[in-house]
Image (cartoon, rainbow, N blue to C red; front, side, top):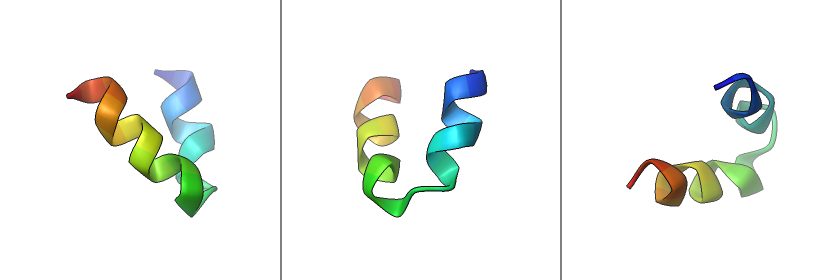
Length: 22
């Protein structure tokens, strides 16, 4: 879950997080 926090800093990775949780 720590990786998710770092991804919030990058808008491009936000989409990747959404797919990972899906």
